[in-house]
Amino acid sequence: MDNQPESISLRDRFGALLRDNRLAIAVELLLVILLVARVRNASILLLLISWLSLWLRRSGWKNIGMSRPLNWRNTILAGICIGILYQLFSIGVLVPVLHRLTNTSLDLIDELIKPRTNSVIAIAIQKRTSKSSRIQVVQETIR
Image (tube, rainbow, N blue to C red; front, side):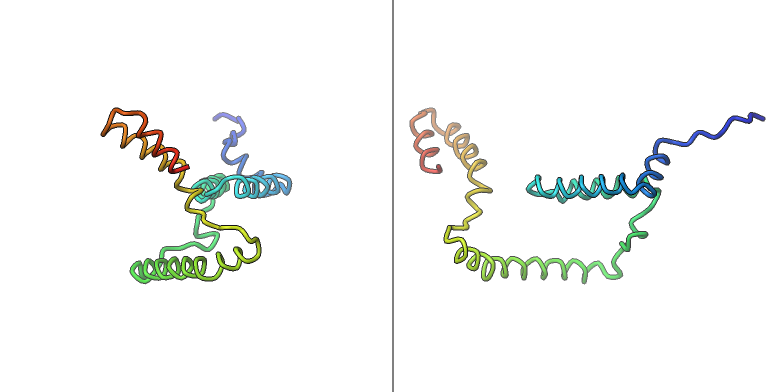
């Protein structure tokens, strides 16, 4: 029999660090806060960081209060209803209030779609016609 001490895996070392060391926990929280502040839609990245953090700690989603829904149909229906209500609140209440407070147009669709639309329309027109002047006219119109 070997009397070698058991080697602790890297996963267990990081997990213990994230469980016990307050500085490591603070760094993890700071990473999440910076990510949310800097990335426009950080949902996927937050999910991955959460999963990695739980995996390193040898914990699971149930340990933080997550569980499978009892009724999938009601859960999906509730999600759709909440999404619709949130959108109605945003369009009917939040955007007009922000417009009055800032006195600027809050048309966010232009910010989200404009760069992609410009390229897609230019490519579509380029495939139909070979005249570059028509492409430039469309690009100028979109801008």
